[in-house]
Image 1 (cartoon, protein in one colour):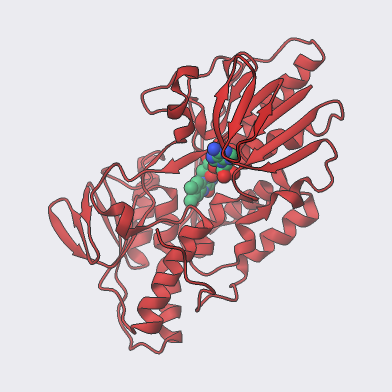
Image 2 (cartoon, protein in one colour; image 1 turned 135 degrees about the vertical axis):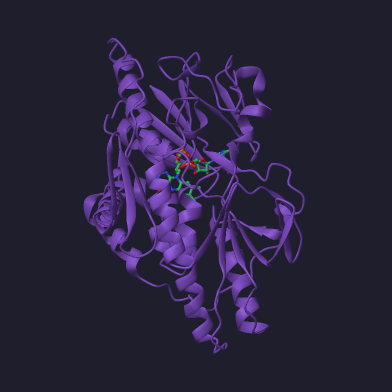
Length: 397
Ligand SMILES: Cc1cc2nc3c(=O)[nH]c(=O)nc-3n(C[C@H](O)[C@H](O)[C@H](O)COP(=O)(O)OP(=O)(O)OC[C@H]3O[C@@H](n4cnc5c(N)ncnc54)[C@H](O)[C@@H]3O)c2cc1C
């Protein structure tokens, strides 16, 4: 049986690892990047901590898997009738079964100036660009911005807002800039931060953010951005450093191949009870229109489900039906403090931050052998060498 998986993220890598346990399955994993990206650690990397915690080479993950071939290529289209994928390299790839796990992309909702002036933290390039901007501002021009603005009060925005101040203060001291209060503002359009969590959790997080000096502006809408001003609900905020963590959209692959997929209102792919979008065609993780889609744990759950059913199919045994499972959510808010939620259980403070550390071990362990996972997990505490001086200027946007 030949399974072609597209996407080297949580869903794609886990599906390949599960299928690789059976030597009769031939697996091809196609991804546009040579690394697996551990998104939950990106805010740490953006604020000076080890890059190793966020990127793991696919070659290292599949080094010992004899029945997995990793190909670096960008898949552009699919033809389900001939069971073929076409890629940017000009190559085509056949499949008996195809699993699509392409993840989400950032969207600026067409807001004027954001794509030019805002920074992102979703990829190595974006993080490098942000760090270079801070270096250029503090290290070369010797200035501190009037405001550092983070847009988006979801988990990433909250995590980043809570750690950015410490990072900037370290940079200030290193570059010998005069003592200066650093203003960090978190802007969120909804009436509260962490809108997918319980109201009490949102309140606790807002209190915690205020305590560590972050100004929280909820119910405020970003309207436009230029080089030194962000317009928010009719009011200008002076800032040359806007970090956009809001807004994700489904991978454009599906819109570009819309004749083969039924898309929901939010652009995700409608799948049946076996996560199929067509014959022998499966869509999982962030791409699938399922109840809790948008979380790493859901992509891992989907991967287990698909791998199990593909094996059942190979053995001509009955298939399982998909059941969405609510995963626990834990969001760190600065050092040794987090919020945790799972069903009716809510925990805050340092016990929740321990749970986050445990969740990270399990997250790495899902993808890597235990020793390696522990090794990477430990690097979360390590400040990287280019903390103060990003090694290379980033490419133009
Ligand atoms: C900054 C950030 C922090 C997050 N923190 C958390 C958290 O703490 N907890 C949590 O549960 N979730 C978190 N998430 C969400 C979580 O990372 C996603 O839900 C998860 O990655 C989804 O897995 P996936 O396999 O669907 O997609 P991804 O993991 O995004 O993988 C998609 C893969 O497909 C590749 N790809 C894309 N297009 C193509 C193409 N055309 N051809 C070939 N390859 C392609 C990409 O390079 C990537 O390797 C976070 C997300 C972000 C952005």
